[in-house]
Structure formats: structure tokens, C-alpha cells
Length: 81
Length: 426
Image 1: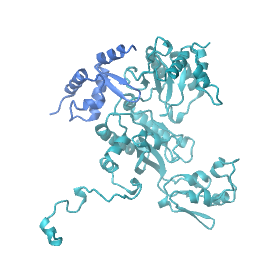
Image 2: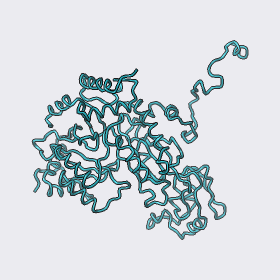
Image 3: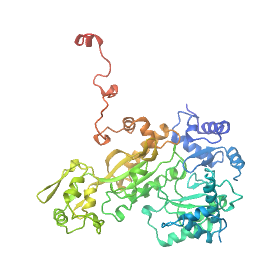
């Protein structure tokens, strides 16, 4: 019996909160449940963005995910927002 | 009235060519924020370092692409470019616009943004440069509700698909590029608007191998028109070309210092597979050897046409600055029927097969061409469920080591050593 969507999303939030890196690639979330297909992980990550649990950060060529409090602080510290 | 002294930039206006500095100054008369673009660039020229920061968290609600965050690191000095985000707007197929639409788009951009544009970006979409964060949502609302247009792709999304003019204007197009581009744009809205991949992924659709959108060089998934049957020949027109009655290449060399048209020099000798010859005054083609390069058709468009059985070749994995330099896409499927009747089901099947594999195996920030190069073409062909064919091979291998899978060898790798020794003494 694999993890439910809610369990995977909880693991993703935990990873985004505790990871030394504030911004994570989508592939970093694959490890939250190696049995779940990457496309499903992508859908779950984008659903977390919709719920406000994660935020996108984009360089223009690559998109990463982060917890809003961690990423906003980072941008704020650099004098942008 | 200039807001900043820009002696270094002013030099860029002195040459014989059009200057972006002049363009920005013209726009700055209308929108004073644009003076700060020049001021910031002048500072970068002086200090030899960029003052643009890298990326950001900006976007519009529900979308994870189409907006690229751009900030400068000296906002107090240049407040006009404190926020200068880029907006990518999905272009219409083949970039057909009405002047009414273009005027409305520019009016919208003057209202919400800097008025600076880049028509078009290298992916094909409309690039609007310079928007403050608080203006993004109002701009997006007006774009979608008043103009009925949408944002394109950026970041790790499917990028805005692009196509050549196709059958709308070109008699050589072997399939309907506009229909395919539009269909896949609608089919993959989620992938265009929200990140899905380890890195960017681009589709491009060309109707023939003249490849007017540079699909083979610029896209991860290139659909390039080709034909399955024979080149159609009008022998009367061939004779007329030989007699000099029609200009070669549709007249593009008229006025140049060229000799009289020579079919041998300009067509037969330049055929890459040498599959053409003359028998008397008749042109003959060994179509089985033709690589569909289009050269002969380009030179004698009245005499030669692509075959009637059109479709497309699928090439995968182009990228410009790849590990070993620029890389063209690799031919994976030489011919595929491309039809709206089955909603392009066979093309979609290949795309999803490629994506499922790349999403799993591709590394962060690795284009699919790099993944293919890393694992090797034999592995890629196998995971795609394809049989290797001669078209996959550039030349016969010079490396004598051939690796076989056990199931490819009759009897497998199991063997009786005693039996072997009866025939080959140690």
C-alpha cells in the first residue's frame, strides 16, 4: 500500500521546510515517495502552490519550489520586496 | 530630456546600423522610466558587471510561467527599473496578426508596462519587457479578458509552441503545421502554464525540411514535414529550366554574378546522396536514396514538388550550448502520419513517452538532448520502444566492441564449457 496524496504532500512540505536549501527542484520531491510517478509528484507540488503551501521561484529558464516564508525572507533580505 | 549622462551608450548610436540605444531613448520620451534602463546599462558598462538580479517569485495567480522576475540591484539610483519583469505572451500560430490586434496589444503594454518589446523571442512568443509587480495582475486580466490572449511558457514549463507558415501560404508544407501547433498548445495548457519538467522543453513544427522555424536546431521535439512517396517531377518544366526559361531558386540570384543555369552544377552535383541524374533531357531520381533535403526542389520549384503522401519526421534533443557545442536534434522517427482526424494521437503518444522517461531520468537543468547524450542513443531508442533502423546511424561503427543483450543472442549467454572445450582446446 503506497502513500496517499495527503501523506506525500505532507512529506513534501516537511522537505521544503527542513531542507538546507530554501529552493527545491521538482526532482528533489521525487524522493518523498519513490513509488509515485514524477508526473503525479508534479501535480501534487503544483496543487501545494495553489493552496499557498509552496511558491514558485523562477530564474526564467528553471522553476523551483519553496515555502513562502523562506523564499519571501530571502528576497526581502536582498532588498527587493 | 535625458535623465542620465550616457557617453558610452551614445557611441553605440554612431555606427551605420540601427541602434537599440536610439530606440530606448525614443521610448523614454514617452515613458520616463526607460531613462533608467539606459542609466543602469551605462553603469554596467562602466563597472563591467551586470546590475540585473537573477529571477524571482513573481507571477500571476494560478500560473507558474509566462512571467520572468527581473529586478535591478541599485533600485534607489534607478527606481524606474527597480522591478522590470518580463512577460511572455503566446503568439498566434504562424505569427499572423491583424493591425487592430497589434495596436491593442501595444496600447495595453503602454498602459501597464514600459512599452518596451522584443518581437519575437527566440521561442517565438511576444516578449514584453519591463513591468512592475503590482501591474502584473491588471495586465493579465486585460490581456485575457479584453484581447482573448494568454501567457506563454517560461521556466521548467513546456515553452510556447511555434510553427512555420505551413499550408496557409506554402505549397511545400507536408502537413498542417498550424493545426498541429494549435492543437498541442490547447492540449498541453497545464504543461505550458505550470512547471512540469527538470528543465525547459520546446516544440517546433516545420512543414518541410527547409525548416523555417529552425526546429532541428532550437527545439527539444521537432516535427519536420517530409513525404513518403516520390518527388513529383514536371519534365517539361525541367527542360525549361535547362533552357534558361525560368530563373533558378525562384529568382533569388537574379542580378548576381552568376553563370547561366547548369542543372549538373547546381542540382545534380549538389545532391547529398547523388541520387539524381539526367537520361537525355529527362531528370531521373532514385527516390529510395533521397534524404528529402529539398535542395533540388528549392532550385527548380516549377519542376519539382514534394511527394503527395505527406507526413513528418520526429527529431529529438536539440540544444545550443550543449556539452560538446551546439547540437542538432537526432532523427528518431523518419516518417509519421500527422493527421487532425485522429487528433494527432500518434504524435501525442511519442511526446508522452519521451516526457515520462525524461521526467524520471533527466537531471536538474538537463535538456533532453543532454540526457540522450548521457545515456546513449541505443538506450534512448530502446526506452522509446523503437527498433533501431539505418536512419538512426550516421555511419558504420569503427569501434569493434558490439554490446549485445542476452535476449538478442540465440540461446542466450548460457553455455556448456565442456562442450566448448571439445571444439576449442584450452
